[in-house]
Amino acid sequence: MRTIIWIFVLGFFACENNEQVLTDWTRNIQLREEASDMESYLSQGGSLRAKLKAPKMYRVSADTVYAEFPKTLHCDFYNAARELESRLDSRYGIYYENLNRVFLRDSVVVITTKGDTLLTQQLWWDQNTQLFSTDKPVTYKAPGKRIYAAEGVEASQDLSRITFRKTVGTMRVDDSGMPF
Image (cartoon, rainbow, N blue to C red; front, side):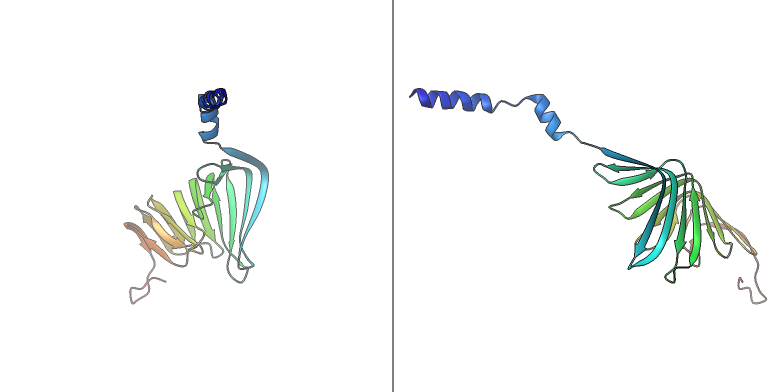
């Protein structure tokens, strides 16, 4: 009988939950790594697709794993033949690993090897589709073209295909009225 009482007493006290222990077990933990003067390469199918340089990077493991570039970043994009097709500069960027998407802000500039230029304050880059997109105002410059898109664009990373939203601007056209 005494043994049963002791088992009951020990079981009762063993089931008591210490609030601090519960908090420690259930709190959100955020792990943060820091890198300086970093250089990173992205390849797909064994082919170099992008080279990223940044003076500072924080990689954060939390609910969403991301890499933050708080002090500028520069990225060179390459085509399937490993030729440079465009360059990107931004004052701030954040790469969401689970989404394979990059959010860029503050003086974002994309320049192709032909000199076509896209300027905006916010831009998304999708690693899977290799498309840029934004719903913020954009200025696009190319030889003989200057286009302002008040509601953003969707563009391939080499700027060969661009869909402008609410545009204003000038463009040279040939005798048939088609742009060149």
